[in-house]
Length: 434
Image 1 (cartoon, rainbow, N blue to C red):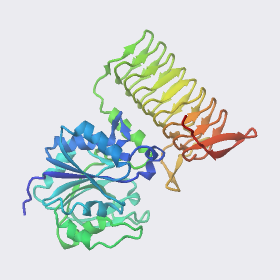
Image 2 (image 1 turned 120 degrees about the horizontal axis):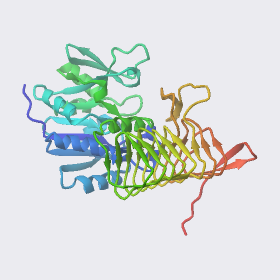
Image 3 (image 1 turned 180 degrees about the horizontal axis):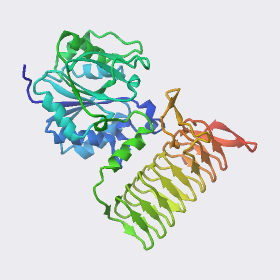
Image 4 (image 1 turned 90 degrees about the horizontal axis):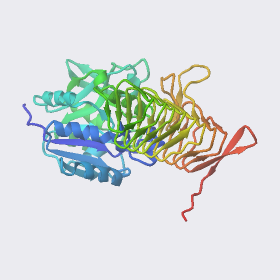
């Protein structure tokens, strides 16, 4: 049966994004900046470019921040409707709350996945001849995802996070669907999963057993998930690779060396003696240098200060952050309104040269990256000569006393102070408003 043109897109943007902490303590996952733009903007831009008439945005966690941004930036560009999921009970529940709103097949995109608009058009083209479409992508680590069981291009089942070495294929669920409204009937019969959620994949699996769910395969380099903290670095790297030519709108003093493709925003000043090696993105109203070294795959937001004799390598530094002088930041993500004391260092290489592990949701996860620095939340302050070891996460609104070496994650609102000469204690930080 030929289905009508897809007129509605649903974007699931309600989750807490716990694997993106410490940044999601203070901002919802859809607003994590990639190349100085909230991640949700890439999804919305591509949906609008494909001619879809209506977008339903399912929100909950820090929903006001998401809604305020989308209303401001897209209020005149698209018909966008917000639906509060309420208590988050899984992706299936997030879709089920829309049952009375949708009467025709719809595009469904998880709010933490990215494909470009050409790929999205390809998916919608396949949907012209199939009522239900699921997008699959081959990966090297399928055991971390929902793995697809396929036969003759059709879905036969989904196995969630199978044991390593026992996965039925290397094709995973990409988090993009076109679904007919019959999915709501399957969702109403879906049982609560062991983790206490209504799983969309359970309903889609039942749909595949009863009918036909077409699997559209896309290439691995056409799909990206913003799921873990180091994905911020990887997705910024991908976007930097798309820069075709330099654009310099700020002021560049004499004796500045710029190589490769570089974007420099308005009212930014690059001071004498600084070297910038692209691809690099520098936002507006920044101050860089003198004598600083900005290395490839670095992204600086707006109102960022990189002071004298600092080196920034393959890092993302968000708005209003100051790294004034004599600091090294490598392969790290630094949040908004952070202030580093002189000589603060983020170590990005283990002494034993092994890959760096990071604690996510209470588990130690191997990033697979040999070089990976620190993840510093919003409004953190460090004293002089603080060192952050590889893979460490610092919660927002934390203060770290001078001279300390931080080997473990620090929770939000902490005051880290020395005990003797070589150790420290973490206390709750109480901030008083005058």
